Image: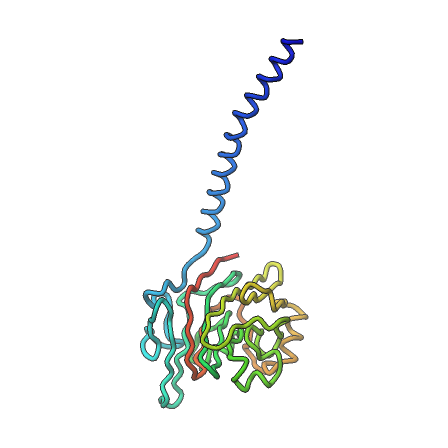
Amino acid sequence: MRKSIWFVALALVFACKDKPKESQEEMEETVEATKEKESDWVTLFDGTSFDGWHMYNGGEVTEPWKLEDGAMVLYPPEERPEGANYNLVTDQEFTDFVLTMDWKIAEGGNSGFFWGVKEDEKYGEPYLTGPEIQVLDDERHPDAQNGTDRLAGALYDMVSPSENVVKPAGEWNSVELMINHKTNEGHVILNGVKIVEFPVQGPEWEELVANSKFADWEDFAAFKTGKIGLQDHGNMVAFRNIKIKAL
Protein backbone atom coordinates (compact mmCIF):
# COMPACT_ATOMS: atom_id res chain seq x y z
CA MET A 1 0.00 0.00 0.00
CA ARG A 2 2.80 2.42 0.92
CA LYS A 3 4.55 1.56 -2.32
CA SER A 4 1.41 2.41 -4.33
CA ILE A 5 1.07 5.76 -2.59
CA TRP A 6 4.73 6.48 -3.30
CA PHE A 7 4.27 5.79 -7.05
CA VAL A 8 1.18 8.00 -7.22
CA ALA A 9 3.04 10.85 -5.52
CA LEU A 10 5.97 10.42 -7.88
CA ALA A 11 3.66 10.52 -10.89
CA LEU A 12 2.09 13.74 -9.67
CA VAL A 13 5.50 15.35 -9.24
CA PHE A 14 6.52 14.52 -12.82
CA ALA A 15 3.14 15.66 -14.12
CA CYS A 16 3.61 19.04 -12.43
CA LYS A 17 7.12 19.35 -13.89
CA ASP A 18 5.85 18.60 -17.42
CA LYS A 19 3.01 21.12 -17.29
CA PRO A 20 5.15 24.29 -17.29
CA LYS A 21 7.13 22.84 -20.18
CA GLU A 22 3.96 22.32 -22.22
CA SER A 23 2.74 25.81 -21.34
CA GLN A 24 6.06 27.29 -22.43
CA GLU A 25 5.89 25.46 -25.74
CA GLU A 26 2.32 26.60 -26.28
CA MET A 27 3.32 30.17 -25.48
CA GLU A 28 6.22 30.05 -27.94
CA GLU A 29 3.91 28.69 -30.64
CA THR A 30 1.42 31.50 -29.96
CA VAL A 31 4.16 34.14 -30.15
CA GLU A 32 5.43 32.67 -33.41
CA ALA A 33 1.91 32.58 -34.88
CA THR A 34 1.42 36.21 -33.85
CA LYS A 35 4.67 37.21 -35.54
CA GLU A 36 3.65 35.43 -38.72
CA LYS A 37 0.25 37.09 -38.58
CA GLU A 38 1.80 40.54 -38.12
CA SER A 39 4.27 39.94 -40.92
CA ASP A 40 1.39 39.42 -43.36
CA TRP A 41 0.48 43.10 -43.07
CA VAL A 42 2.09 45.69 -45.32
CA THR A 43 2.16 49.35 -44.29
CA LEU A 44 0.89 51.53 -47.12
CA PHE A 45 1.33 54.76 -45.18
CA ASP A 46 3.53 55.08 -42.11
CA GLY A 47 2.85 58.73 -41.35
CA THR A 48 6.26 60.03 -42.39
CA SER A 49 6.22 60.13 -46.21
CA PHE A 50 4.07 59.62 -49.29
CA ASP A 51 6.21 56.69 -50.45
CA GLY A 52 4.05 54.17 -52.27
CA TRP A 53 1.50 56.78 -53.39
CA HIS A 54 1.15 59.18 -56.30
CA MET A 55 -1.40 61.51 -57.83
CA TYR A 56 -3.94 59.69 -59.98
CA ASN A 57 -2.69 59.87 -63.58
CA GLY A 58 0.07 62.12 -62.28
CA GLY A 59 3.38 62.26 -60.51
CA GLU A 60 4.59 62.48 -56.94
CA VAL A 61 2.33 63.69 -54.16
CA THR A 62 2.57 67.44 -53.59
CA GLU A 63 0.29 70.19 -52.34
CA PRO A 64 -2.55 70.38 -51.55
CA TRP A 65 -1.70 67.14 -49.67
CA LYS A 66 0.40 67.58 -46.54
CA LEU A 67 1.88 65.41 -43.79
CA GLU A 68 0.63 66.37 -40.33
CA ASP A 69 0.88 64.48 -37.03
CA GLY A 70 1.31 61.11 -38.72
CA ALA A 71 -1.54 61.65 -41.19
CA MET A 72 -1.88 62.63 -44.83
CA VAL A 73 -4.21 65.61 -45.03
CA LEU A 74 -5.87 67.16 -48.08
CA TYR A 75 -6.32 70.93 -48.04
CA PRO A 76 -8.18 71.49 -51.32
CA PRO A 77 -7.61 74.93 -52.87
CA GLU A 78 -10.50 77.36 -52.97
CA GLU A 79 -9.75 77.89 -56.64
CA ARG A 80 -8.33 75.11 -58.79
CA PRO A 81 -7.33 74.88 -62.43
CA GLU A 82 -10.08 73.57 -64.68
CA GLY A 83 -10.10 69.79 -64.72
CA ALA A 84 -7.57 69.47 -61.90
CA ASN A 85 -8.05 66.77 -59.29
CA TYR A 86 -5.91 65.66 -56.40
CA ASN A 87 -6.93 62.04 -55.96
CA LEU A 88 -4.23 59.68 -54.70
CA VAL A 89 -3.61 56.06 -55.65
CA THR A 90 -1.17 53.39 -54.55
CA ASP A 91 1.80 52.46 -56.69
CA GLN A 92 0.86 48.79 -56.26
CA GLU A 93 -2.23 46.88 -57.34
CA PHE A 94 -4.22 44.45 -55.20
CA THR A 95 -6.83 41.73 -55.76
CA ASP A 96 -7.91 39.95 -52.56
CA PHE A 97 -7.09 41.81 -49.36
CA VAL A 98 -8.00 43.29 -46.02
CA LEU A 99 -7.40 47.05 -45.87
CA THR A 100 -7.41 49.05 -42.63
CA MET A 101 -7.07 52.78 -42.02
CA ASP A 102 -8.27 55.71 -39.94
CA TRP A 103 -10.06 58.65 -41.53
CA LYS A 104 -11.25 62.06 -40.35
CA ILE A 105 -13.51 64.38 -42.29
CA ALA A 106 -13.99 68.14 -41.88
CA GLU A 107 -17.36 69.61 -40.95
CA GLY A 108 -19.69 69.37 -43.93
CA GLY A 109 -17.09 67.26 -45.75
CA ASN A 110 -17.30 64.47 -48.31
CA SER A 111 -14.63 62.02 -49.47
CA GLY A 112 -14.12 58.29 -49.89
CA PHE A 113 -11.71 55.53 -50.73
CA PHE A 114 -11.70 53.07 -53.62
CA TRP A 115 -10.47 49.66 -54.63
CA GLY A 116 -10.04 48.10 -58.07
CA VAL A 117 -8.95 51.43 -59.56
CA LYS A 118 -7.60 51.35 -63.11
CA GLU A 119 -5.13 54.12 -63.89
CA ASP A 120 -5.39 55.30 -67.48
CA GLU A 121 -5.58 58.68 -69.19
CA LYS A 122 -9.02 57.78 -70.56
CA TYR A 123 -10.35 57.78 -67.01
CA GLY A 124 -10.35 61.22 -65.47
CA GLU A 125 -11.30 60.06 -61.97
CA PRO A 126 -10.76 56.91 -59.87
CA TYR A 127 -14.53 56.52 -59.31
CA LEU A 128 -15.03 55.71 -62.98
CA THR A 129 -13.55 52.26 -62.35
CA GLY A 130 -13.26 51.79 -58.57
CA PRO A 131 -16.18 51.14 -56.20
CA GLU A 132 -16.18 53.55 -53.27
CA ILE A 133 -16.56 53.31 -49.51
CA GLN A 134 -18.11 56.56 -48.38
CA VAL A 135 -16.37 59.04 -46.07
CA LEU A 136 -18.86 61.69 -44.99
CA ASP A 137 -20.03 64.11 -42.34
CA ASP A 138 -23.47 62.51 -42.04
CA GLU A 139 -24.81 65.36 -39.92
CA ARG A 140 -24.05 68.22 -42.29
CA HIS A 141 -23.31 67.11 -45.84
CA PRO A 142 -26.38 67.16 -48.13
CA ASP A 143 -25.48 63.82 -49.72
CA ALA A 144 -26.60 62.18 -46.46
CA GLN A 145 -30.15 63.22 -47.40
CA ASN A 146 -29.99 61.39 -50.73
CA GLY A 147 -30.36 57.88 -49.29
CA THR A 148 -28.81 55.66 -46.64
CA ASP A 149 -26.46 54.19 -49.24
CA ARG A 150 -24.70 57.58 -49.25
CA LEU A 151 -23.92 57.57 -45.51
CA ALA A 152 -20.44 57.11 -44.03
CA GLY A 153 -19.24 53.53 -44.40
CA ALA A 154 -21.68 52.68 -47.19
CA LEU A 155 -20.67 50.92 -50.37
CA TYR A 156 -21.53 54.10 -52.19
CA ASP A 157 -24.94 54.10 -53.90
CA MET A 158 -25.13 50.31 -53.56
CA VAL A 159 -25.26 49.01 -49.96
CA SER A 160 -26.34 50.98 -46.88
CA PRO A 161 -24.76 50.66 -43.42
CA SER A 162 -26.76 48.44 -41.06
CA GLU A 163 -26.00 50.76 -38.13
CA ASN A 164 -24.97 54.36 -37.58
CA VAL A 165 -21.62 54.07 -35.79
CA VAL A 166 -19.72 56.93 -37.43
CA LYS A 167 -18.07 59.50 -35.17
CA PRO A 168 -18.73 63.24 -35.57
CA ALA A 169 -16.79 65.35 -38.05
CA GLY A 170 -13.33 66.16 -36.79
CA GLU A 171 -12.92 62.83 -34.97
CA TRP A 172 -11.00 59.77 -36.16
CA ASN A 173 -12.89 56.74 -37.46
CA SER A 174 -11.28 53.31 -37.90
CA VAL A 175 -12.37 51.25 -40.88
CA GLU A 176 -11.67 47.80 -42.33
CA LEU A 177 -12.49 46.83 -45.90
CA MET A 178 -12.26 43.19 -46.98
CA ILE A 179 -12.42 42.14 -50.64
CA ASN A 180 -12.18 38.43 -51.35
CA HIS A 181 -12.95 37.14 -54.84
CA LYS A 182 -12.09 33.59 -53.80
CA THR A 183 -15.04 33.45 -51.40
CA ASN A 184 -17.10 36.17 -53.17
CA GLU A 185 -17.26 38.25 -50.01
CA GLY A 186 -16.77 41.89 -49.14
CA HIS A 187 -17.39 43.74 -45.91
CA VAL A 188 -16.90 47.04 -44.13
CA ILE A 189 -16.21 47.27 -40.40
CA LEU A 190 -16.49 50.80 -39.03
CA ASN A 191 -15.33 51.55 -35.50
CA GLY A 192 -15.40 47.86 -34.62
CA VAL A 193 -18.89 47.12 -36.00
CA LYS A 194 -19.54 45.22 -39.22
CA ILE A 195 -22.00 47.50 -41.00
CA VAL A 196 -21.85 46.43 -44.66
CA GLU A 197 -21.62 43.02 -46.39
CA PHE A 198 -21.77 42.39 -50.12
CA PRO A 199 -20.73 39.98 -52.89
CA VAL A 200 -17.88 41.13 -55.11
CA GLN A 201 -18.78 39.34 -58.33
CA GLY A 202 -21.50 37.25 -59.99
CA PRO A 203 -25.25 37.87 -60.45
CA GLU A 204 -25.83 39.47 -57.03
CA TRP A 205 -23.01 41.96 -57.56
CA GLU A 206 -24.23 42.69 -61.08
CA GLU A 207 -27.70 43.40 -59.70
CA LEU A 208 -26.25 45.89 -57.18
CA VAL A 209 -24.48 47.72 -60.01
CA ALA A 210 -27.56 47.61 -62.24
CA ASN A 211 -29.64 49.29 -59.55
CA SER A 212 -27.09 52.06 -58.95
CA LYS A 213 -25.98 55.22 -60.73
CA PHE A 214 -23.14 53.16 -62.22
CA ALA A 215 -25.40 50.89 -64.30
CA ASP A 216 -24.33 52.39 -67.63
CA TRP A 217 -20.70 53.04 -66.75
CA GLU A 218 -18.82 50.73 -69.10
CA ASP A 219 -15.72 50.05 -66.97
CA PHE A 220 -17.08 50.52 -63.46
CA ALA A 221 -15.92 47.63 -61.23
CA ALA A 222 -14.50 45.93 -64.30
CA PHE A 223 -11.07 45.21 -62.81
CA LYS A 224 -10.58 42.61 -60.08
CA THR A 225 -6.99 43.75 -59.69
CA GLY A 226 -6.46 47.46 -59.21
CA LYS A 227 -5.13 50.25 -57.05
CA ILE A 228 -6.39 51.64 -53.78
CA GLY A 229 -7.49 55.26 -54.14
CA LEU A 230 -8.17 58.20 -51.81
CA GLN A 231 -10.67 60.75 -53.05
CA ASP A 232 -10.39 64.48 -53.56
CA HIS A 233 -14.00 65.62 -53.28
CA GLY A 234 -13.14 69.24 -52.66
CA ASN A 235 -13.21 69.00 -48.86
CA MET A 236 -10.57 68.70 -46.17
CA VAL A 237 -9.97 65.05 -45.20
CA ALA A 238 -7.23 63.12 -43.40
CA PHE A 239 -6.05 59.49 -43.50
CA ARG A 240 -3.55 57.60 -41.32
CA ASN A 241 -2.44 54.10 -40.27
CA ILE A 242 -3.07 52.58 -43.69
CA LYS A 243 -2.24 48.87 -43.86
CA ILE A 244 -3.12 46.00 -46.16
CA LYS A 245 -2.94 42.22 -46.02
CA ALA A 246 -3.21 39.99 -49.07
CA LEU A 247 -5.68 37.10 -48.83
